[in-house]
Image 1 (cartoon, rainbow, N blue to C red):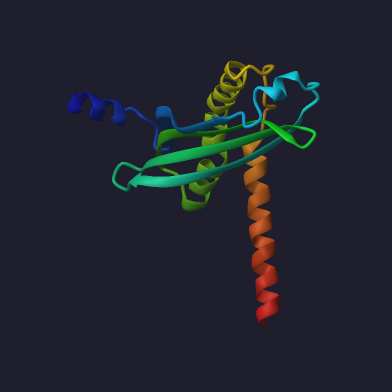
Image 2: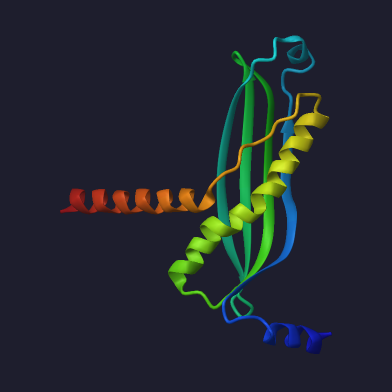
Length: 164
């Protein structure tokens, strides 16, 4: 078996990304105002928050866990209809990329690969909770990562001007 894995590794290009596993790390669903919320006029305000966190599991194997956290809070007027939070995780083997490109892969590409799984989990939980289906719109994680870099750079520049 180990010999077969080594042969498979030898056939890979020098730069490659392999998704080893996709799984739900944590999930939470609440309907704090049920059952009375079901009789309210359904005109919800939906707020979504999202972030991802990479974690290096093994330096020798270039193994990373990336966790995409999506929190959706849906309110009708001031009352919370439901709150759902999904921590969708994946284990990725990433080889042959320079550090800057690796950060972009972990911050943009990997969360983008996890998003459809998280989106499905959110939709399933909301529907099973008795509410109309909730379809999260597609997200451009590469653009979000670039925005994050620009904000980080601007903050660093602002910190440098205040310390001088």
